[in-house]
Image (tube, rainbow, N blue to C red; front, side, top):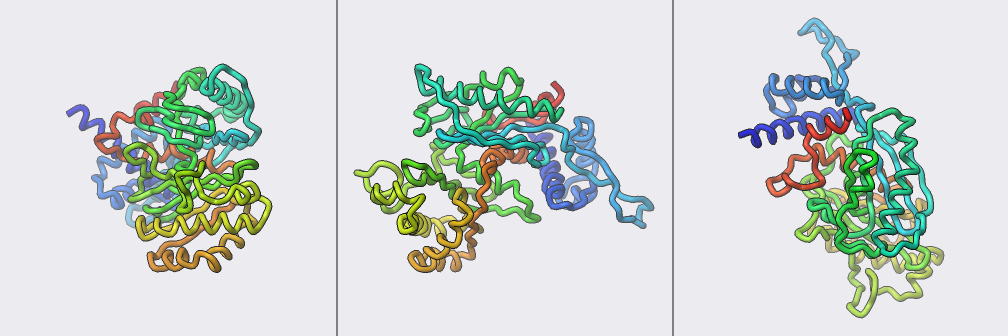
Length: 390
């Protein structure tokens, strides 16, 4: 019974706070009665949860500018307290890294970028841990300047991540295999450390977008330019509002339809194309043709509301659209038949780091299924309240 009560308590807090959070993003006034009506909850239940959130400093009260004649006074509105806590988000690639600090309402307070440090320790895991330590040490003074409690450190990397057991299953670029989360990195800061696949960080970013009616089904395609090996691709699938993991946590690992077992990498394109894709237009066209012809079957299979493309220079948008119009017309036709949209996102260095940080917030809003109850990537609200106060 105690377990059921705790589950219901956390569920009510998540539902109510998510409503306030998204309304806050869209500058929509939210009152207790608004929440009661939209979530079909008793006013007493809403009142108790709101009091808990006020007592723990998660939300703030204020008055609207509109008079309410029926009750003779201005209704009390609710908003996220931007100083409740902050999260460090990090995108780590083998050549560069990006960081951000965002507060609990999703606003970015600080961001930075740099070249990934190099170390020659005895193992890949030791190098990886040292790199992260140095990056976190460099950004933590910015947290202290903000004078806002740190709630978590979240890292997005290329690879397959078991977010339930807390294991980096396989990150080929960093040479990591079955590495448990190196939580000792975060111990000096007394906060949890979480990892996520970098493409899935794009999904968490979209999930946090300012939308009055958030999308439930979408496909994110992350493309990363590399000097020596062309463009790497990762995908993330979100269905019914949940980022899909798969039974082995590898949903979204990309292989193009031109790939052959005799080829290394993700595609069957000639090496001459891959090594010149970033500076020769004809090579880029061949790469884009290969990408969108591979994506075409995913549209009727998943029926995404939107296909998002991340990571390409802003000047490449017209070229990609021209390739679709001239060489992959089936992609455009299938999009129209399924009522789906294509959105090529503006390139933003801090986006994946921001998505990693927003993952922490968005996971607090999700109601876990029974098998997810013991996931190491999920905290209870009491644990978050404790983090904020310590």
